[in-house]
Image (cartoon, rainbow, N blue to C red; front, side):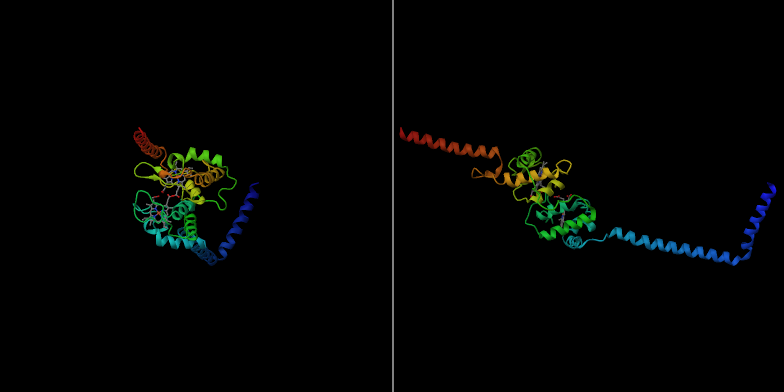
Length: 277
Ligand code: HEC
Ligand code: HEC
């Protein structure tokens, strides 16, 4: 046992000793090689990671998004900032609002906002449909967020379900006839009359101003189709069936109108009766 171990140790010593003794130069060469390898690795790692850091700041944009960015840099950057992170006291960050919000705001002419006001107003849009899409694509690629689906947004819609959903979710602000109404602190829910299918869908997805967000968990895409169809086909179709809409303010103006018309009729009736007798 012992002699076996001794013999093995001796063998190992000889094996190790010999090459080490053979060349000190080779060891130096090895050290130099390791140094070069380490430097190369470090350099390589730098070239791999440094552009990576840059790429995160400027992600490659698709063609449409690059067009959108060019428009953004001219018309929106003063209030929403470079890379759309927002500007204190001027405009909110647009990171994560999605193309839905952009398409809603820009296609309804609310953006670009002309001046600071309590609530951006609907105006004739400044941009074409194509430009609106490009702006939306830019914000989408920058930060993601909700998107309006492509195609027919009233596919297989059910008008009566739509009416029910509208009365539960929308009428408290937009009124039963969709004519809109005042909210607190000088804000208002606008009339739904000028809104397109895509704008109604986008408004639900993005919840502009005081409007709540109706995500797909609260109101499914099928239910959104029902609501859109109800607004576009029932509400707008039977608006003003009785002639004048009286501003669509509901019972108080209607009551006032009936009151005035009724009083006048009564006065004439009594004059007529008085004249006869
Ligand atoms: C004069 C300043 C101003 C300019 C210019 C402007 N915005 Fe805005 N933007 C605002 C303000 C303030 C709000 C928030 C008020 C509101 O929603 O009514 C806003 C809100 C938005 C929103 C809604 C954000 C959300 O949370 O959903 C979008 C999207 C938007 N702007 C896009 C744009 C785009 C795109 C442009 C350029 C075409 C633009 N804006 C130009 C001031 C501006
Ligand atoms: C709490 C009140 C409130 C509720 C509830 C509400 N909205 Fe709104 N809605 C608003 C306000 C406020 C605006 C205006 C936002 C702006 O001007 O930036 C608006 C804007 C809109 C617009 C844009 C109209 C235009 O100018 O084109 C549409 C479309 C719309 N809402 C649809 C709906 C639908 C559909 C529902 C129900 C699913 C709903 N809203 C529920 C408050 C509300």
